[in-house]
Length: 296
Image 1 (cartoon, one colour):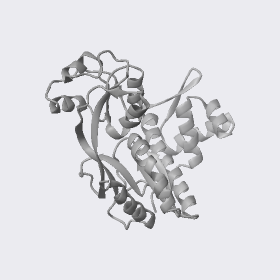
Image 2: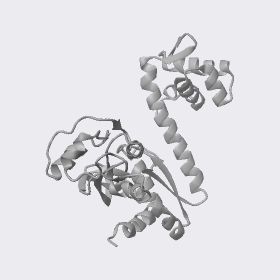
Image 3: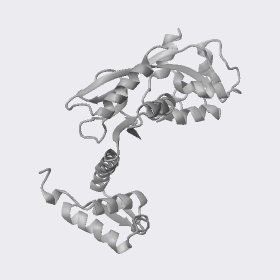
Image 4: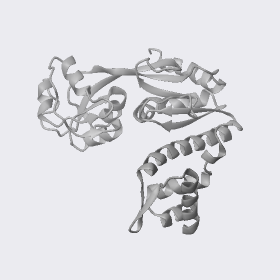
């Protein structure tokens, strides 16, 4: 038994609560879920009654989350997402072998995706289901068979397969004045774009190329893709992985602000749980990945 039933709300109540929290309106939630407004209100009241805590309050025409509701909806969204992914996996596995893989957006789009057609051709019996995650997470309680993480080999409870180091290069719009720059310090005369997960990236790059300093603060982004688009539109100089910069450089949307590259703070790894046998689709995927990571 997972937990006493009094702690397990119905999925309908959780869906109604999540929709109201996101939309701020029982009417809009009802439209999205194809229910009546009164049905949504009953679901919310039933959920609050079951938990014994107020989750939402009305402010004018809008529904707002209480502190308890704010914390609860975060967990509810994660649980609903995992439940939906588990259902997709179960449905797919009845038809063929399925691999549920969590990927990092930039690496998944620019390194993995171009190669996946080869895997599909050599392993037509395996269906790869991809979902994006921005940060490493514990695989044990998740619905994923494996994930691509960035960093070092310091995650507990998993096996590792190294895929590629992250080599970074500064890029900018073709019309940026003075580019490409012959000296590293010349880049500091222009806005530098930063990534949330690599806050010291520019400081490491500058030190590696012989100009150690604390770079100025600039626009912050949560994904490489968004930062690349900002660079294309002339908002500053971006430090991008080479695998991501190459397509933009070939198309002429970006140019090298400097031809100096450095290795980032970590590498990309395929990881999977070490507390259970790897399923056949994962074994096939690992064997295929080994052919993709060998020097050519």
